[in-house]
Image (tube, rainbow, N blue to C red; front, top):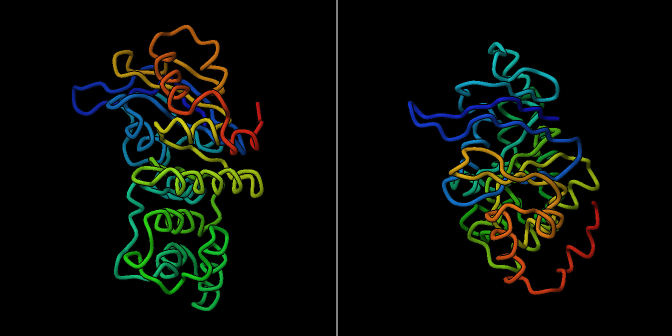
Length: 261
């Protein structure tokens, strides 16, 4: 679904990432992790076309995102949906109106059809009964769910989520993890997620890459449990052992349920 080769991300003369190579496979939950300032969000913004790379290639579904013309670039972006860290819902609109907005911008459907689709997307994330509520009238976790519903409005093949669990309590975060895993398993959606929350990473990830600020690139790639148990890099061990201490020796219910290698 995504192929990245020799990617270099820089702001003016400041190089954030260099020589980055990885692939994202169809239908997997792929997580970008690492410490603060390592370039996680920068990488995500390059993958969704917000910033052009200083060098390298990004292919989305076999199409060159970097060198695409304007019309082809827009066509590529129709295959992806994005949920930003804050949710970025419009406060003056109901949840249904927020989800309907991409349909208004990118389709010729009539209002009745758009409302039906928006209602279906809200139902998929467990918010069918809250369609008429405004963002200020629902919880933070529900706002994140509504933002995911909006990201799915155009039936994208991939969803990009930036720190979906940020600001959520552990129970709400676990519920959001279960939703992401269910959408990946039942609808075959490919997820690319920026996260540093170990409980979420262990619960939902099929594969991860770990970025490092000093290396300016990837220092580990694989299944999180495999990296925790076998990787020799000190920073990788520190990152995952902290998670093991936080979570205890037993696996969470979500981990027990999700056993993909």
